[in-house]
Amino acid sequence: MLVPDLTRSEKRSKSATYLIGAGLCASCALFFFQHRSPASLWLLVVAALLAWLCLDLAVALLPLTFPYYHDLLPLVAGGSRAFSLNELGICICVGAALLRFLLLPEEWQVTRVWVQNLLQQGRPMFLAALLLLLGTSLALLVSPDRPESLHAYRQQIIEPLLYFLLVLCYIRTRADVARICGSLIISVVIAACLGIAQGLFHITTGLLIVSTTTFRVDGPYPGPNSLAFLFDRTLPILLALLLPGVFRRPTSRGSAWRDPLCWGYLVALVPLVWALYWTDSRGAEVALLAVFLLLLIFEARHRLVVLVAAGVGAIGMGLFWSRVIHLFNVPGHGLLSERLLLWKAGWLMIRDSFWLGSGLNSFNTRYRPDEPRSYALKALNGQAFPADYNSNLLHPHNFLLDFWISSGLSGVLALVWLLWAFVAILVRTYRLCAGLRQGHVLQRLLIGIAGGMLAGLIHGLVDNFYFAPDLAMIFWLFMGVALVVQNIARREQDAGTKDSSAQQQV
Image 1 (tube, rainbow, N blue to C red):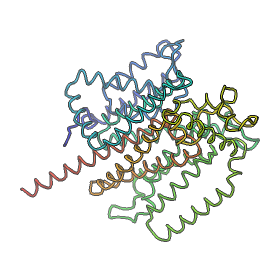
Image 2 (cartoon, rainbow, N blue to C red):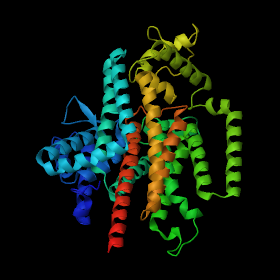
Image 3 (cartoon, rainbow, N blue to C red):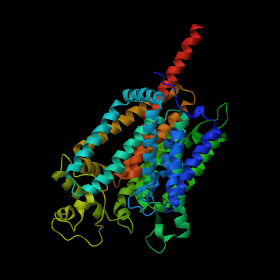
């Protein structure tokens, strides 16, 4: 069914869109830096009014706030309750959407039909999302630290799911998809530049000094690995968009490198690769190397390139496994023996809380050696906790263990179901895009999103994958974009079929 667009960007002039977008960014940025001012609340009012006028643009720009969830801002000067910029943006957009539905019945009807189409096409994904919501909700009942679990439940489950719904409701055109993915890339580039500035000027407040000559940057985060998680998700998108310019032969329209966007992707790669090197995140480097080789093989489709990539991958994996102890037993990276202890403690927690888990952010409470019935001490079988181990860790450094502990068995099943539905939608949409105008651009984007999810999963085998506010937001952003692109492809295909039938009748 074809759904008419309402309040879409095509009905606004480009200058109006640019002005509203600049106003949204300026008002939120000023509030971020001037939130102690008595008049700062008016900046949020301005942002809310602009979001009301152009809600699709406000939803598309929200990824610019993802990395700053550690910076909690009071709504008024001296206020005791504080929220991150991302949380405030979600609340503004949700509030504006509800008001528009109440005051503009036509918009509600159009949105309802649009979302119904998405529900029909992505039913498994929605059911899996409900299962994850159920699992994390039940796990709250047995959490050893319910206030901490409730806070994480809001930031990592409720708000990302609300953003997922906003994406489904208001990202409806190719331009919207381009804006939301562009916002994510720009956000990560800004975070990378902050990390590079830390390294260049040795800003010690954001620099992990490992030795006199070695350091690790973290950008807007409290740790280098958190910054590297962003590169896991974003670098594959840039690579997927860039590689056709390397391997595709010139067409009648000229080389792909004549497109300014290709040079833009290349320029964006520079700070990301630079900052990734300075994070010194071994998990991210291995994950991105694996995804890069897979993209190279897929893009080249030449026997020699496949053999070379496979050889490089085999040598890299051989070096990785032969030096695994060195990789993890270096200053600033944690010890391999400590990670094994984390995994063992995690399995013991799962054994004792098999069905429901123990709630979000409960690992730290149950692991610490200074707590009664500490699982760190249980995993050590009565031995003393080593002085060089970190006793204040938030997750077990493995995404399967993390999901099971945080949301129980239903959470693990929901994750597997979500990933299966995600892959099925990507494969189906990739085929749908083949016959569309500029369909190869959508195909490249789908490949990049798949690569970002895969890199996150590989890195998540030895670190975090989902349970941080920015990672949860990006996870559901990818899910939403996959569904939206599928609906766009179906709509364009139906429109093309109707046009062809009309021409034949004439």
